[in-house]
Image (cartoon, rainbow, N blue to C red; front, side, top):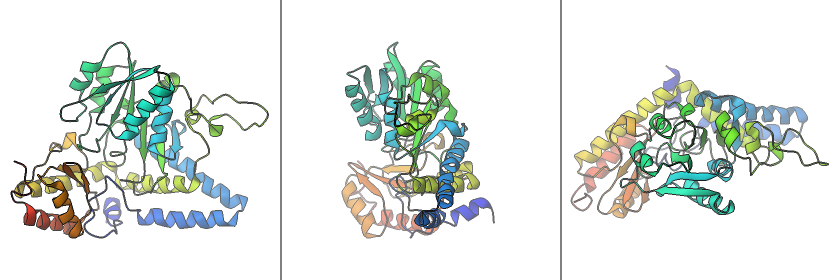
Length: 374
């Protein structure tokens, strides 16, 4: 059995779970790590505390490996939103972002703008289809723009942004700030096209909340002020003087990381690394193809991208009565996310055939004019 097959075999949640874009049930290895590290912390011995502290470095190294970056440039964060706060609160000029972004991006950008007394100004764009493409961004570019903030995979449309094309468009003198929450670990992409990448482990990495990270390139560290830098962002510890932020990426931290969260992140990323991100992406792509085919066969509109290069693990259905369809799926034990006029389905590499068969049966039972788009 291959390492990838071993990885798929760790998905021990019940059939019917298609909500990975909202929450990833913790993996067996992560659950084991929680108990093991908690036992060590329960002793209070310095040697035990040191062992658990090693998880911090392990998490930085593993995240850096998937990013193609240096471990010292990876910071551990309690949330991806806090990572974005470090990036945006220290930025000035006009920052392009879509009005349809997840609030972690849009609210943080607006709050940072207000806190800076508009030294930072949002440059909002509103694509007709919600997809942030180079053509849409190009229309908003001018000499005042200093950065673009974008989700690699959009939470609502499932659209996967082209980082390489966006980088080429904005050039080397502007920052590319990327929210990779819906992509990290399941999309095989060159993250070094970006300057800042934030993500967390509680969805696709199956590592639980609190297990987030933010990576800052050398260019980002030169241009972003460490406004929210705290005690862990200095070169040492002093109670007698106010130390300046360290020149390293660790300046973009507030306090020492939660070692239990670091351990969960390390294990979640390790499992993905060992299985292979490309293999995980390929398996998810197969599941997405199957889900799209099922929806098409039952006459239910799919509004998320169909091309593999423009999507990740999210499929968006847009029936006439999404609430009724969502309720029918829930009654059948199929877990999805209903939001507004759509039903979001998200499969993972370990989604089993029984779950897809169950989805097929339920969409077939309700795939009539009541649930199809006109």
